[in-house]
Amino acid sequence: MRSENFIERIFNNDKRAISRAITIIESGNSNSTELLKDLHKNIGNAYRIGITGPPGAGKSTLTNQLTKYYRKQNKKVGIIAVDPTSPFTGGALLGDRVRMSEVGCDDNVFIRSMATRGSLGGLSKKTIDAADVLDAAGYDIIIFETVGVGQSELDVAKAADTTIVVLVPESGDSIQAMKAGLMEIADFFVLNKSDRPGSDTAMTALKTILMMRDHTEKSWLPNILKAIASENSGTKEIVDEISRHHQFLEQNGLLKQNREKNYKVRIKEIVEHLLKDEFWKERRAESLQASLSKVVEGETSPYQIAETLFNDFKTSIKQ
Amino acid sequence: MRSENFIERIFNNDKRAISRAITIIESGNSNSTELLKDLHKNIGNAYRIGITGPPGAGKSTLTNQLTKYYRKQNKKVGIIAVDPTSPFTGGALLGDRVRMSEVGCDDNVFIRSMATRGSLGGLSKKTIDAADVLDAAGYDIIIFETVGVGQSELDVAKAADTTIVVLVPESGDSIQAMKAGLMEIADFFVLNKSDRPGSDTAMTALKTILMMRDHTEKSWLPNILKAIASENSGTKEIVDEISRHHQFLEQNGLLKQNREKNYKVRIKEIVEHLLKDEFWKERRAESLQASLSKVVEGETSPYQIAETLFNDFKTSIKQ
Image 1 (cartoon, each protein chain N blue to C red):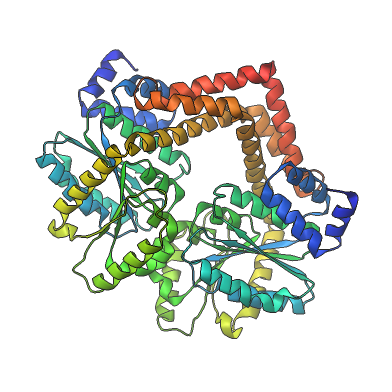
Image 2: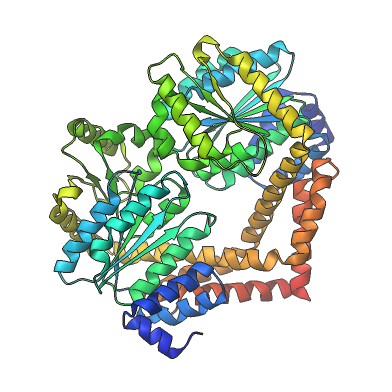
């Protein structure tokens, strides 16, 4: 099913080939590994932007505006939207995707949604792999659009070169709820819908939180930009800030350093997948299942079972 | 450092021994494995209650009231509070802990905070191990108090026999923010501070969300109880609902089944820890580090590196 031709078609931005490649990645079978190996030589030219924030902050609208802006600069834009598991917001996201159809017909824009449902943990891996396909296909800009709620989504955002956290004036208490994780990954903030009441209070709150942030690690200070994405207000400033951050990273050798760090996390994830697959082959999975009742009864402990399984694993490799 | 005597002291509710045992578990060294194996034979009598919800919902106050109530029934209560990573709410939690001092002087109440900072992933494991210490020490009720924001915290809540999600009238939009994860683990809800404005609206919203929930799996329908924890209003009803849920689980064979499921997750976690430890011994960790630059340059792919490391692992076990 893979062939020189298939890889060539991806390199030539053949959207059907790209779609199929991402579907292979989503399936997570061994073909995806081979595929990614073949694609890797063409990778590393795309600039990756993470856009995250609470539900309803206007991330899709902003992504839409950024995409149109980059298209005017003749840049090819790939978008990977990570949809949350929640069945309750599913409808809204579908609406967002429809809205995106404005840019979706463009030959040099590729949009793909990836669902988190049932793929906890594996999601960030697959999302980043999908970005690699777009990178190899020659997309200059790759935007990850995620709802910043789970660890997976944060992992995706961290895999970006520049991460933008989008908030709205009302998200004052969301700042608490979303906890520090979201605040700490932002390279800059966009206060969207900034014409709404409470905008100034939100700015002040954000600035206060930023002042409390630990700045010792690097000298980049996250800005807060105002925007009204639905009216395309603030888009240029956001693109400029992305460029400024990109330059900062380049000049300080951080772009390469961050990417190395991300690859490290990623390789570890791949290794751990391989380990788990190898470990939980039928026999040991069955043996675990059979022992559970004894653990609940107190006859043996979880640690004892784990150790027995682990020793069995080692023995089976030796054979 | 471990001795028959140490284990005996834990079985006899010696608080200093219990504290030391939990500290050993937090350190995560090999002593903790031996300790847990020794304790396991005394485990399985405690009923485990998870209390989770957004920051500020009054979880600590509620835990306090439940504890006093159970003490009147002469039950021994262990509390494990999982503090969030956020540096911004650290103060508030400290306050909560101080407030808890009311019950903290009781010989048959044991309170322990476990911090999430820097222990992502390993936290749920350590928290549940700590609960095992309290279980072995003869505590009848163990309460996990967690802020329902991260996967770790959700994992802790899932490890409970009964999980209570605490919300406040104002958390209407938190429901969105906290996403379905929190809604789906609740065995019942407590709408705390129910004398505040918006209480009825919040009840309606909650009921609507619950109606949308998938109920096919089991026939338990989560209730919503009103409470004002600060005035000890609703405490009896909550304790009754816990009992009712406990009975439901017993009568349907679900208590054992759920505990088996939890042990399964836990044994898998332990195994994966063992695997990672064995895998990332010096040599392979160094080899990974040395290869990163080549991956960024596109000379080799993450999958290629992972495979090489994996093969090296297998070879080293064979030797």
